[in-house]
Length: 254
Image 1 (cartoon, helix red, strand yellow):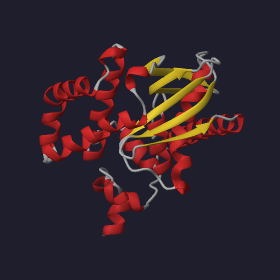
Image 2 (image 1 turned 90 degrees about the horizontal axis):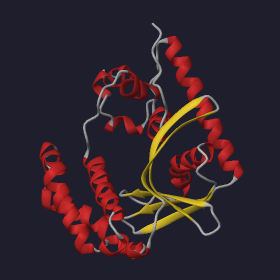
Image 3 (image 1 turned 90 degrees about the vertical axis):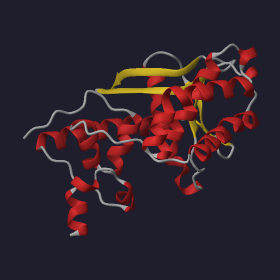
């Protein structure tokens, strides 16, 4: 049976496909929803706080303002979700605030100006529809762009750091395609560190990104035509929400 490919790819869906094509199918084609985990909930909470903080006028971007935003968002959007995960609310909120507070060790928010915050990116390149949101980007004095993404997890070892920039290279490519501008640098803002990892955007990186998009779309379409997506067992299977319906996991456990 031929399957219907999703209308677009995103950096996160490409990452899922690379991790396991069958997990991609469950999520992006079958529409099965993964419940939040403590890690995704923490990331969403911190991202929401910082998004609203940087949408405020520069003079209001203080830690006191961030605390008010955090409290309001907690009670309106996150308290119930935390209860569903049986989290220790005090510990969870402390970890989130630690990430937010560390922003002031990285930069002074009142002095920062961004051209886009939670900026939507939706366009086509080389026959591939791409959709996503950029946490923030600035326009440098020379007209070039710098794209950055918040991270609330651990700083990766140098061996795995390069893979973490794939999402930002995709956004750099799309900002070019959409005519917004040329990106000179991309940065991962590790709030728990705190530390910022930065890479220059080269033509080689852009070319590799184009090839990644084209190859991913080609493989997804081929698997849809076949009507079957293969599982890709790895150590990550232990934490996969779909393992109970995955034949590879069932055979492994059986």
